[in-house]
Amino acid sequence: MPDFFEVVRSQRGTAYYKPDPIPDDVLNQILEAATRAPSGSNRQPWRFIVMRDREVKRRMGELYREAQRRMTGSAPTRGAEDGPVHFSVGMEDVPVLVMICVELWQIRGSEIYRGASIYPAGQNLMLAAAAHGIGTRLTTIWQHCYEDVASLLGVPDDWAMMAMTPMGYPAPPDHLGGSRRKPVSEVTFIDRWGNAGE
Image 1 (cartoon, rainbow, N blue to C red):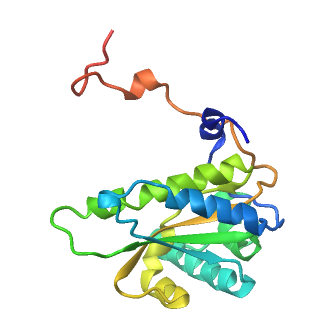
Image 2 (cartoon, rainbow, N blue to C red):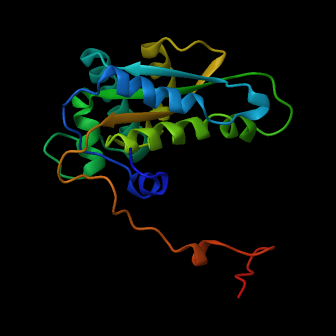
């Protein structure tokens, strides 16, 4: 297993996936890592819908492309070389899609509380996948077809879908690692906004 910081540096958004299946024991270990994430009051308000069935993934791809059409005015078509387009038109070929859901409990204050209790689980899932050499991305475009996706997956009204993460071994031209990031000095202030320190 690689060093944690090596994993952090290797994790990046993947659009091209090999059709190779993810072994059950590996997938279970990745999902178990997701459940180790922190959540407010240790509520653990998550559910993960693992999509492996080709027909379910094909239908999810149709809804994803419809969501793209609603968002941008045009739907992607096969033959495009752009990574995100390639992903959306070939979604049934991605080995696993994971829908990350959160419980809609009564909260006082900002909706941000729910996000704070679910997105760490998504990040754990993506890092654990990277540790196994598996590519992921986090996408919410399908939210433009939320009701149709909820119907497809049977998500009850007292739960909300927050993000979807495809998972698979990267296929060329994709790979793990090598993503460009701004240096810490450009994104960090000391004690108050704008103070870059010495």
